[in-house]
Every structure is written in structure tokens, then in C-alpha cells.
Length: 116
Length: 109
Image (cartoon, rainbow over all chains, first blue to last red; front, side, top):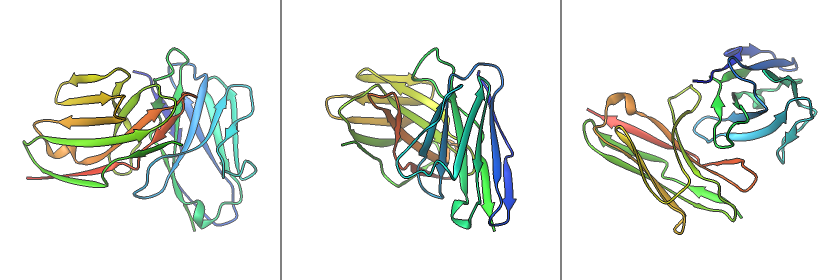
């Protein structure tokens, strides 16, 4: 089946630094990628939807200047958490569609971010 | 508006059967999904129902009633490895997934 990878899987950083998370579709072209955030014991919260070559669409309440999303190619999307603070500590998950069916999303393994 | 609801936690015994319910409300509907999520991992796809009825896949079955805004996931012959959170999600008219908070399933020997 289709594979989506994320890097890094774990990151610990100091408050005020920026962190970049990569999401790659390894064996298919991802026309659409999604970025989710999940706090402990809560469900996935969609942060933004990105289509290759165009600006991301952010969900209400998500600061686009703080969470920079770049979908530069059909196999790579990046999420940069700028000036991270402890409240940004969370589990960040990306998923991707290959464009063949709207109901199919392939999830990455997630990136756990801890901001000290 | 849109909302989706499922129980927070359920407990079952190894070898038994458990049914996890999910109710939803939405004006636009493009299918109902069930995902399994182990602690610290991303969700993995279990099932997708877009028409009414029961879909069986091995030990797992999923049911949908669109008129009632209701779905359930049925797990048979429970194994310890089935201990996980089970997420219900529907796809709205914009083909966006709306997620439930998840049901934590605890399996006891």
C-alpha cells in the first residue's frame, strides 16, 4: 500500500526556536496533503489542507504565520512551527491523498514535538 | 451544524465481542470511516461505509444507517493487541474528515 513518511519522528526544542516537520509520499504523488494536530486523549484536529503549488487553506483558529506550510512538490509538504512555545507541544500528523479517490487518505507515522 | 459523538472508553474481555457506537449530524455526507490508533502512533484505516448496511472484514465489521446518523464498529474474538483508540469520522460535503474524539478500548485477559 501507499506509504507516507514523516521526519523527524521526535523533536525536543527550546522555547522560541522554529521546528520544521517533513511529510513525504514515498510511492505516489500526493495531490493534497493534510496537517493534523492531536493533543493527549483528544481527537485529530485538522490544521490545514495544502495542494501542490498553491497556498495552504488553514482551519479557523490556526495561525498561518505561526504554522507555515509549504507543499512544494507532489511528494513533499513541510510544516514549520515558528517561535515554538510549550503550548505547541503536541503530536503532529500528516496525511495525503493520491487523487484517485477522495475517500482514501494515507497517514504518516506522526511527529511528537516537545517544547521546553 | 456538524457534530460527531462516540463513547470515551469501553472495557471488554479477551475473546469476547464489543460494539463501539458512533452518532453524527451533518447536512452533507460522503461516508463514514473507522480508524484504529495505538498510543503514540498515527491512525490506521479500518473501514469505510458510504451506503447503509454492514461491511464485514475479518474480525471487524462496520455498520451504517444514514437515516439515523449512526454507525458502529463490531470487533469479534478480541485480542489483547486490539487495545487501542478507535476513531470514528465522517466525510462532509467538502470531502473533509470530521473526527470524533475516539473511544479508548481496554481489553482485559
